[in-house]
Image 1 (cartoon, rainbow, N blue to C red):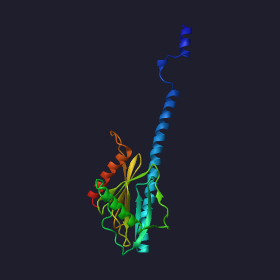
Image 2 (cartoon, rainbow, N blue to C red):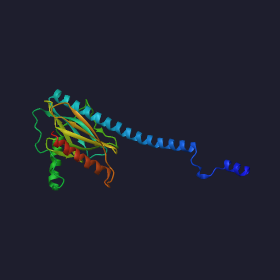
Image 3 (cartoon, helix red, strand yellow):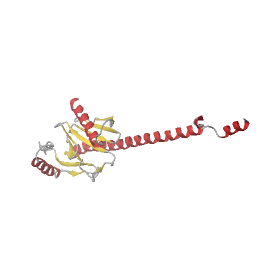
Image 4 (cartoon, one colour):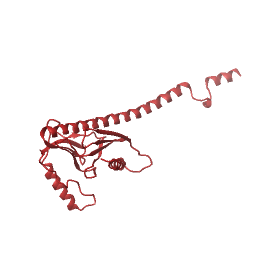
Length: 235
C-alpha cells in the first residue's frame, strides 16, 4: 500500500486539474493578448488624432491667410492618390468669382460630362498655388488612415474618390464642410462651421460584424450616413 500511495503521489493522475503555475501562465498569455489588442487600438486613435490635428491647423492657417492676403484660399484634397494628400493653396484676390458649376457630375453621367468636369477643374486648379509659409509640398496621410469622404454643405455633395476643395474667403467665411476619416477601428468626422472657427470632432466605432463588405465599402457606407445626418441637422 505504501508503494502504491507513494507512486501516486509522485505521478498524479492527469485529471487532478491544472497546477498553479499552469493557471498563472495562461493568465499571463491572456493579459499579453488583450494588452496587444488595446495597444493597437490606442495606436490607431493616436494616429487618427494626429491627422485631424494637422487638418485643424491647416484650416485655421487658411482662414488667417485668406484675410492677410485678401485672397481666396482653399484646402485641396487629392482623394484619388495613394497615399492621399492635401495642401493649402492661395488663389486670386477677393474680386475673383468661383465658377458656379464646380461640383462633379453624378457617377452615372456620360463620359463626356466627366471629361468636361475634369477640364474645368484643371482650368480652376491653375488659379491656385501652394502656400509656401504652410507647406509647399502636399501633406500625405499615413497608409492606415484614409479620408473616406469630404462633404460640402454648399451643394450637398460628398466626394470620396476624386480631387475636391474647401474654400475660404477673405471675409472669414468658408464652405460649410465635413471631413470624414477612417481607420480599421473607427471613423472621425470633423465639421467646419462656415461663419465661426468652431471645428467639431466626433468619434464613431466602425461596425464590421455580420457583413461581407470590404473595409472601404463599410467605411463609405457609414460615412454616407454621417454626411446625411450632418445635412439634416442643418449646416
